Image 1 (spheres, rainbow, N blue to C red):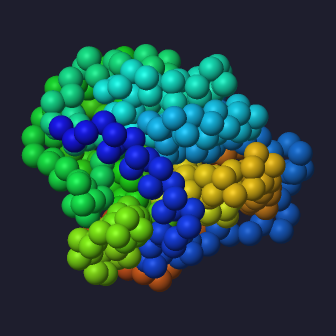
Image 2 (cartoon, rainbow, N blue to C red; image 1 turned 90 degrees about the horizontal axis):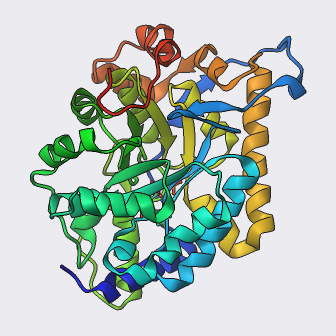
Length: 382
Ligand SMILES: Cc1cc2nc3c(=O)[nH]c(=O)nc-3n(C[C@H](O)[C@H](O)[C@H](O)COP(=O)(O)O)c2cc1C
């Protein structure tokens, strides 16, 4: 097991890298290949549009999650506190970053639990890494993570690409699927299977859905890219980066494809459309494609750390206002109306999903409406 100090200082390296360098993929999310049809006579007043959305058994005021980023170094406590304040103000969900440091060193638990204290009512998501699960974490550590923040759900993050390019990485994933199958029945809050920027695939979602997993955060390619972050971080520390080449920009499943594949593979599940969501337009398109809510990480952190709570509020308000106006401009009153909105899918997105065996018309007409019929968060319950 690596030293605790290293896990701790890596947290700050990552924040420094994502604030100071370009760490987003050159590859696109492919959300630009989606056009939601404009309605010039929407028959709804803007102030009647509601952004409320059910999510894993609770109701959010808006269909958005600030996905897990930080905690684990004393300097990160303030960040988690402020993110919790923001999530509370807007009634959106919040994830904390990997809780490994807090599980292994109880003095660091406070850097995570501060989020719960700052926002007792927020939908708060715990976070542990799949490599830790493959490497020996048991239900005991999972329960510790959940209790640490009195979590509403727990995300298990998948980051095989990052582990391969982190100099001290732990690219050990063998046996992970049977570990997941072993634990799913014993966790009594929703378990979110979460990528970290390289995008879940239909094959994986289908397999995990078959095991009883009901919540997926696709975290697709097109936003923050952890291969890139690790290359940048190595250079910032004066180390020779592992030779990522073009993988640092192009390896993975773009967000728009990941959302469609996940919904196609797991019709009655909760799906978070994330990875490169930068404004309300992106968020609306991810939801229109079949996600329940959108997830955003880097832009919130950047606005908070570079401009304080005011800038972060301005950013989140712009995302929510754009989402609201898009609903209005499609004649919708509630978020799930976006699933019925007429859409055009074109370009590479159309080509790629066809090659992946998904019939666009069938998908848009039927599959993306399936969550309206049944939606339960319970792990393993059918
Ligand atoms: C500074 C930073 C730290 C992150 N740490 C974690 C983490 O500990 N656990 C996790 O599941 N995801 C982590 N992520 C990944 C995000 O939750 C998200 O999946 C990814 O950044 C893609 O979203 P984005 O393009 O909006 O940033 C982190 C992201 C950032 C920017």
